[in-house]
Amino acid sequence: MKNTETANSTTAAATRTTVTSDTPSELGLIKIHDNVLASLVSRAVLGVEGVSRLSGSAIMDNIAGIVGSHSRAIEIVKDGEDKLKIVIKVNLLYGTVIPATAVEIQRQVIEQVESAAGVTVAAVDVVVQQLDEFIEEDDADEDGSAAAGVVNAAHAAAMAGMPAIG
Image 1 (cartoon, rainbow, N blue to C red):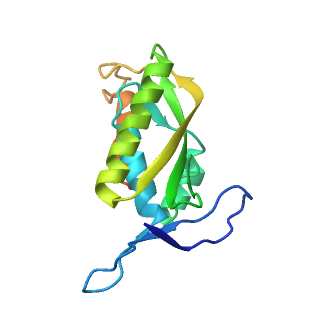
Image 2 (cartoon, rainbow, N blue to C red):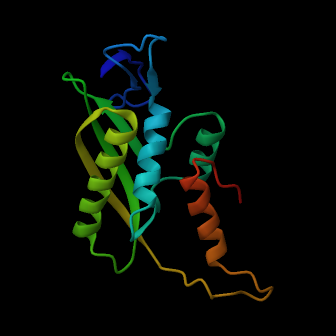
């Protein structure tokens, strides 16, 4: 894979990555934007047992999703050898075995990104920023709605690549 576009973002360490195929198809050039890669990363991370959510401000990430940008909890950097380094900031559920969950996150991200996008992932750094309390599905409040429904709605929205509202 070949990087054809790099633009500075608000932080000096972060770069925008667009990955293109070294050998274009007979129909044209194939480009995979960093938002697509971030979506693959997000789905892989949220599918790992013990992960509560991606870290960061829900409000800012919702706004980023609306304007077509990815979460600030995912940083994708392309090195000089056409390999990606991915940094992921996550919140885990309290009681999770942190090292085992972090390794599983690394495995899932590498597998998903390499198989779906055809790029080589050199490293996946996992930064655990917070432990969240586990909320039981059957913990209902007065009106009968489950408190976990809000958490599950946000999780489902993130899995679908859509911003959660509310």
